[in-house]
Amino acid sequence: MSELSRKFYQDFIQDDRWKFITNGLKITLIVTLLALLIGVVIGIVVGIVRCAHDQQTKQELRGVKGFILKLLNLICKVYVAVIRGTPALVQLLIMYFIIMVSARSKILVAVITFGINSGAYVAEIFRGGIMSVDKGQMEAGRSLGLNYVQTMYKIVLPQAFKATLPALVNEFIALLKETSICGYIGLNELTRGGDIIRGTTFDAFLPLFGVAIIYLVLVLIISWLTSLLERRLRKSDIR
Image (tube, one colour):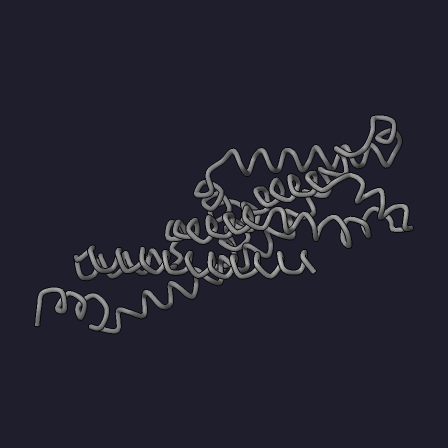
């Protein structure tokens, strides 16, 4: 048996150590997907609020409705500034040791933390996408009798989604890789799974390179699926 084969057996086969990798991968995917869903919901809401405020004139921002919109816009701006201005690791530690200290599920803590973190970036992505849509689209929807929410949902957001798809995919990829810091709260995700093997066998080469290859394959799959989606969207535009 060659040295490499011996190390592979020791790192992954012996005592079923490969389960650290598969179980960690499962947790990584769960946290990433759930956090992305939360982030997209938060991002859309915050993006719409900020765009609604920016698209109003000073006269339209007067009165009770204007005051509420300005207050919501201020809250959204503070949220985006704080989340984007502090490291994700610090946010995770604050959530785990202070805010959700009584939470029994570390996965829940990670999902909420990364969901809130992702929401700030998605909000700016959607805000840019919405603002890039021609103002005439909103006016056309309103002239057809649709209110602001209906026009945004049926006309503006679909166009904004196409424009922001590459940036959203980049955020998804960044979120996937950011989950590697979950080991700081003792969550055995993919990176920690490889590190546990390294700490057990005292061999860093195969476990850590194996983890890196898995992340790379996941990113390549996401990029491939995105390219397929972009092609379908382009075909629908031609039709």
